[in-house]
Image (cartoon, rainbow, N blue to C red):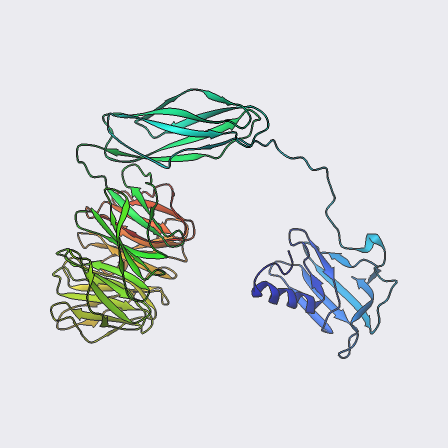
Length: 524
């Protein structure tokens, strides 16, 4: 619709009108004709056609079309059809007063859509809802109650449903329920789990249909199976626009119920035993602490200004976070959940990495194009390391000898040798607008997410050579590698999804739906 957008479209609208043409309906090949501001305009498209517009304009006057020729022939229509090829030439004569005889007929107006009889599909007042989550043991059974309502209906209705479940889950229920007008009812579904199921997340999807033929909303139910104290292997995606965390089961590829956190979560880190998840809420200036056994936030810690990157010390006793707006980093005592004093670093600190020996912290500063080292024994900063423009992700090799810094603006990764002879090595080109980097536990390979390429780039860290990119789809941002080095989880900020990359076979899983706007992912 013309003008129904932001100032980019308003600018385009003005340019078209100044040319004397306008694509009223961009889905069809015709242009409305108006008065050009110029005496001559030529539009050339890469594969034809060419459109040439000429007027009799000689100054600032002449605001009204007097007559129009299209490819030399006089026409009375206020629109032109655009050919697939060749040249379309328009010659307009203009004057200071309207010509009431040009384009005055009904048939001279731009084409319009024909009106057709409107038919509406069947509707229903029936609704069906179900709990979003169910928890049970392997080999156990539970009842899941569907709430079925015809409260606002004026006639009785039958409601039937079909429940499909992950392998190993079984659902038994009545085939349908009949509700009188105004009636509310409950339909019990008996869910049972095979004793062989591993601990983790599984899914039931309930699809309902009313007697009028209307399909009701699909109802996904997340089922968490517990088994003899076994801990499922989960990664956690941070949904920045949904103010939530989505657990993703690495074995089943299913998701758990979204966990509410603070405003605009941007980063997260798991404790070594995976029982606690710490989340930096950039918009809420807080850190959320989540009990992963209960899928619930159990504490909220007031942080500095716009907390962003997070990292735990190797001993698990201290959590560090960056304050993007005030150029500092800050510690939290994990036992007491008390914050410590801030330490000034660079402008817009972003990602934090801590050396394997726990002695040095490194933080990338997007605003000052540096990485700041911090001695964690004295809590003092060292000399800033100059890196590429707008550094984002950073990672340290497992042996602590090298730091790898991603430059989003340059599309490369810079290796930095650490120690007494600290120096930057030649940058390694990756994709367009890279964001995050993760290194395998054996230190042999790094993987970089290319936000603008829908790919991730592997880097052989023994040779510093980038391998061909791996297509993962969407706009990949966060990437996390499991501690066993078998799987990389990659989240797409644009597609609201996650894919799992098998690092042994190179196989990429189907997209797994997440919440709204995921940025990063925390892996065990």
